[in-house]
Each structure stands twice: as structure tokens, then as C-alpha cells.
Image (cartoon, rainbow, N blue to C red; front, side):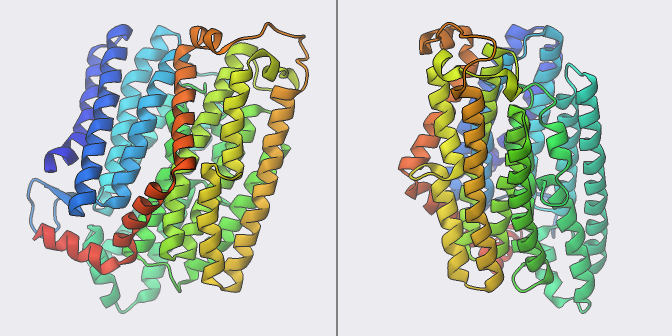
Length: 504
């Protein structure tokens, strides 16, 4: 079993080093990268199966005693996140390879991509706070390089904002770690969670938790810490940022879920109220920002912020159903949002622009691309029975069942935001697909034409659309897995005793 945990880290790390050794040999790098991402998906499925059958799994690196060494922990939630990242890494790799044409850019892209995947894997496995901080920094450096490949002035400006705000987040993270270490004498999450109730000065624990909330909030791009995201994500080529778009902000949501269930249970604290209010503001401001944009990718970037609000709402409601709904929503959103960015890239390849005023007539020119967009767009807005509907249903049901006035207000706001999301998706549909092309009518492209013109792009879009449809029409298994995965989080003592018991 421990071999599977080790492989989750060693596969992307070894691949990244191999990619450096194969610098300039892009054809060999493509083959090695493809095999690596496929192997990673297989191992992640193996790990999920073992966790599902035997419960929480643990690997203590170096066999250090009493929580002193590096501890890698895999429970139901982290195994779901690892499978999700493995699926996206596999599909996004082929999309990016087909999108990036310059040999030099590809040579930089390959090792950076797998170092980023290495950082993502470490984040989902981290059993102590300092290692979580280290994995965040690995991702920050890797994503900085990815965002600046083929750099122009706009990319550099966006990336500098991204790095500056994330360095600030890392500083808050380190301060929080220092405070908790001073109070508990531990860095291991389970040991900290066991010690915190015994501390007399709970106000200082609350201060430390606030630092973590700010740090993870920046990573997740919640209100009012989101401004780096729309300034960055639309600047880099769609193919290069595919993995970043899909998963970087979700790492912040993962960290919020992990910290505020295991280490500092949110229920009844002042941070629960703050998180609920911020969730509502994140949903509302994100979708209003999207409605005001006139660029395909900028609209999608603001939608990322809006959708993060739903995930944070689930954590803040803090019932088992709400947290399970939040995880389901993450899975749905990663797939749908990635696909919408992929389709934006596909539209760019056949029209040469992301600006709405320069686009039009895609439904006549490429009806298959229009249909694939419609599936993902309707899913994002929550039209039944697509995947977004199930995610929003779980969150709305949990909100109304919880019953407090503030939660009901936030839940009602989330339903109104869905209508505004539908409006902004309709705006893209009208401007990009429905209205006549301002440059004149173009020759019609059949599905075969599209597959011949951009095979990697189209196969990636179709693959994700199939996954979205599977989740949409057979959601029950995924809902059950999400619900089972959060039991170890909502039953805090179970996680603590599992880790400490396995460790000793």
C-alpha cells in the first residue's frame, strides 16, 4: 500500500527530471509525458480502491517516531482529489501539447508541468502543516514559470500580481504555522488537532486560524482576495494554463476543508459567520464581474471566482451533506470549467480572437463545438439533470435543512447567482456562437474536419464532456463517495485516532 502513496509522488517527480534530461527532444518528451500521466491515473485509481476498502492510509517517511518526521496521509477526500487531478493532468497534457507549437516553449513546458503535478500530489498527501507549506511553494514556482512561457508584457504583469499576492499568502501561512507550533509543539495535523482543545488561550488559537483562513482564501481566490485571478488567467495561452485553471484554486478549497474540519472545527466560531458572508460575496461579485466582461476568457475567469463561492459555502454550512456537496461541486466544476476554457481555445484556433465583438457565427461554422459548449455551459449554470444541478441541489438542500437565517439567506443568494450565471453564459452563446460572424460567413467544419485540424484539442474536449455526462446521468455513486469521504473529516476524533494509532 505504501508503494502506491510513494508512486503518487515519484511518478511526476521522476518525469519532471527526465524531461529536463530530454530537453529539446520534444517527440520523446511527448511519449514519456503521455505514459507518465496515464501511469499516474492508474496508480491514483489503485490508491482510491485501497482507501475505499481499508480506510485511511499512511506513509511515514524515514520512520521517525512520534510525529517528528514527514507524514503522508491519504483519506477518502484526498484520494478523490488525487484521482481528479490525475484525470485533468492526463487530458490537459494532450491539450497543451497540441496547443503549444514552439519547440522552446514546449521544452520549458514539459518539466514545469510535471513539477506542478508533483506539488499538487504533495499537497493532497501532506499530513503536517509545514510540508503543506512546502508543496504550496513548489506549485507557486512551477505555476509562475508556466504563466510566463512565451511571455509578453500582459502575461508578465498578470504573473507578477499572481506571485506578489501568493507570496503574501505564504507569509500569513508561515505566521499561522509559527503560532500553532508555539501553542501545541507540533506540526502534524492530527497531533495539533488533539492538543488544541487543551490550550487555555483559545483566542490565540482563533488568531492563528484567521491567518490560515487568509492564506488559504488567497489560494482559493475568495472575496476580497480574488483580484489576482482575473488579472492572470486570461493572459497566458489556454493550453499552457489548462492545469492551473482546473486545479490551483481548488487546492485552496482543499486546504480550507482540511484545516477547518480537522485542526480548527469551524462550527460555532466567528470564522464560520465570516466565511458564510464571504462565500455569498464571492458568488455575487464573481458573477457580476463576469457579466460585465467582453472577452471570452475573462468571463470564464470571473466565473471561477463565482463558483468558488459555492464550494466555500458548503464548508461554511458545515454539515456532512454540505461538505459532501462542496466536494461534489469541486469535481463538477473542475471538469466543466476546464472544458469551457478548452472550448475557448478551440474557438480561438478557428477564429483567431477571444474578443466577443470579433467573434460570431461559430454555430454555423462548427456546430459540434457549439453543442459541446452548450453541454458544459448548461451544466455550469445548474440546468437539470446536468452535473451542476446535482452540486447545487446538495448545497441548497443542506442550506435549507441547516435552518439558520444567515445560512438560508446565503443559500437564496446562491440560487439567484445561478440565474446570473445563466445570463452570462447566454451572453457568450449569443456573441460567440449565435450572431453572424462580423468578418463574414466561414466554411462549415464537420466533426471530422475539427478532429483533423486540432485532434488534441477536440479529443480533450470530447473526453471531458463524456465525463460530465456520466456524472450528470449517474451521479449517485459519486455522491456516495463524496459523502463517505467526509466522514473522517466530520468525525474529527476518528481522523486523529486513525493517524496517531497507525503512526504509533
